[in-house]
Length: 401
Image (tube, rainbow, N blue to C red; front, side, top):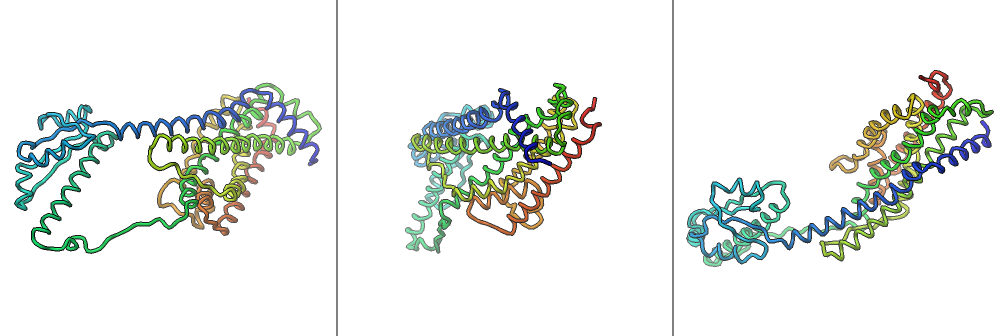
């Protein structure tokens, strides 16, 4: 195999693909513009919705108000709740229809029972999973928690008992992890999935075009007549798919990082709580990129092999679209709580890379696992590339009808 022949094939395929607007759209427009715009738009919209939810006044029903004027008055003094009359039988329908967001049912003689020290109860009716209903319920829950604490303190004081009787010790939580580890752990859940998805999106169209597309256009025969070994042809095509795939990843990560900075700035200006944590070590990101290189090669080789098996572009699409789902699902492993990297998972494609990338971005380097994952993924990529070369040497595959 001559390096000059490989370079000629690579340059030829690169020139052809760059002349195709669909390739430029999938490689540049989608990762650079569409994804960041979606993220920024969703971030800003979420911040605005959260702020509006904090300012919104929720309609709530109150039952048992007549027998508990003191508690009712304190409830009416809450800023973000508006109490409306309702019958007990109508509460489920009103809450389900979102006419009211929640309802409070006080037991008969609630105030008098508290004063005497007798048992009393409060029931809060809500709509589980509905954000506004849960916001109103949270306000009511906090109110009655404070009322309970105040009542307990008054009873202890009236009996000359120390308040430490019910609170013998304090429990405090303190985050001792540095900011880069906290943000790296959060970003590590997203970056592996995003990178693999971009690898797939960037490689699927050129893989189809360089295989099934060549068959449909009738240029495969012309290509085979050239004085270039078939191994060089496959490696040149695979290198072309890998280039587009990695370019898509780099452009996507760059634009996504800039969009995350934009979202953090916008959400901070909107006053939507703490700004988005974003502290990533560039060295960690570089190590992740190196670990993901054989994954990108494996994806490119696998898609090239499937494209060779297909008779047409339509058939290749029908094969590769489900394959994207199969490859992306294991990449979500980094998001699933409780899954930790171990020796067995280090040999599982995609899952291992997803988990080790999360660890690397959080500042933890398991070098033994990194070496195992890199080596095993290189083996998988070599096998996939070998399969692509073997398929390209079979006339029955190249000229299927």
